[in-house]
Image (cartoon, rainbow, N blue to C red):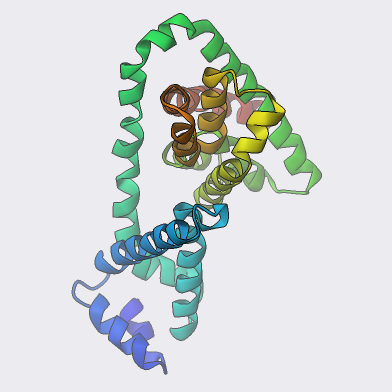
Length: 264
């Protein structure tokens, strides 16, 4: 499909890209892989030279810049972005996405290293995360209804408490759009990163490293965990633990909740 588009395009760069993608017609991985890496590296560079400005968080920059590049190229090929995404980006992008799974599992390492804290506060950690998740689900559901979202839109919003690799399959299973869920997860992470210090001050978590770590990890996922690690080792460990635990909680709670609300 992408090769046919390159033949009809009037842009010289489109023909060049078409030749590059024609190495293995329909199954070329290089474009999706290189685009993902390049936009992420640009995000890292901007984040570094801006001294950590939250809007230049690499995941956020990669998402926005990647969408813009795909839109621009789709326009050059005189096709819609969905077709270009499926034909050119998705084969390599799916490979990049696969690495999210072992990366997420790696969060179990801090869980093991600080299992003393988990054992000591096991009940408090799990109860707070379960109760918080249930409350957030009701808040997300009714706010989504208030803003007029469709059933698919609501289903896409519900799993956002989990990290992206876990939230996307759950979203698909309950009838949501995985891409919208991924965007919601990333936006959550960027907002939490930007407001972390203010939220810790407002909720008086300066003297509660466990609470601060759980909050940042739950709401900000991997980005929140990185912020928590800047605050201290205990905060970083608890944030990593919360990423694992909240993913399990969301996986167990969201499908029954979606069924209860008639979304499935």
